[in-house]
Image (cartoon, rainbow, N blue to C red; front, side, top):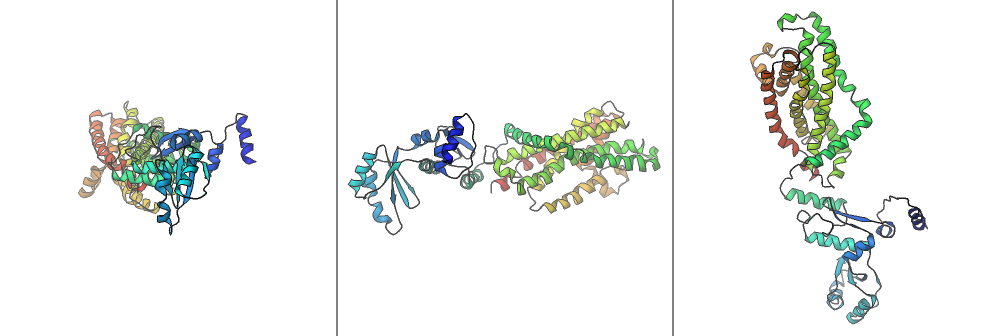
Length: 424
């Protein structure tokens, strides 16, 4: 009765989406069945056309219990002949194009009175699965005419993961990474009111408290400008760092370990490096937005006097990429979300304190000064000051080149940092 009701609704022009594990229901109700293997569409057609393209029209079932399996198998050559057959568990399916042909075969083989039935969608999927097992998924052509696998559940995903780990690492695809980026952007559109504003509080409050408040008591002659003008471009670099690194730490960890969003993504043609590249692209997008808005606030307060100040926003993208890569590599290593306390407390906080954001590095002891001046954040701070305050393009180019070189070194490990989690 329910199936008849669904047929009536379809006849009125309505489109129905059903979720079921009952293949007879799929065969009866669906207009199209799409078979995926290794994340690629292998076949897509009406259920009856899929069955007809895969198997003969009729099937007969023989039970093959373990104790009598050998005796029953002895009748198989006489019954099967040139017919297609398929063993599924303890059942043997023999296929033919006519009922009379199969009936004569049963009688000649002495197999007794057996029921001859039409071939089903489940039979076709078993046959396709058997053919795919003989043809490795990574070598099978990704066309609709290729023998498809039956489903993309745990079994299909596991086969795909084994195939991935046994072949060379895949090259990231920008087109597929853009899909991951677009997904993040779509989610961001729904939550930007609650996520974008809080990220500006820390640098703006730091500028107000330290640059303007504490700066009232700081002699600007020692640093060549007012303390607020000294701190503002440094906090711009910190904003670029935090905007990028937060996205690839907590957010990626939740999608990887808790929400399991990437488990669904890798059942499609998307590979783990595509996911990593897409997340890095999204981290840089967040970095661009945060630095752009913060620079606008700094300029409105009069702390960005140089005409080259707008160049600081794109110029700080390599700084964001360096920390995005570092955060993604760390995410690929940690197993518990509490481990990020070490990353933020023992890495990012000391860098923020010692990289020249709040005071010149020349005031540090020699050892700490040497460490601070090779840190990426220090080069980002000096790059920001060169563009926002002094307009010194040659100095900015030197710091920019160092950040680009470091980001290229970290990019490779970051792209493959999720490989072992999603292909294990």
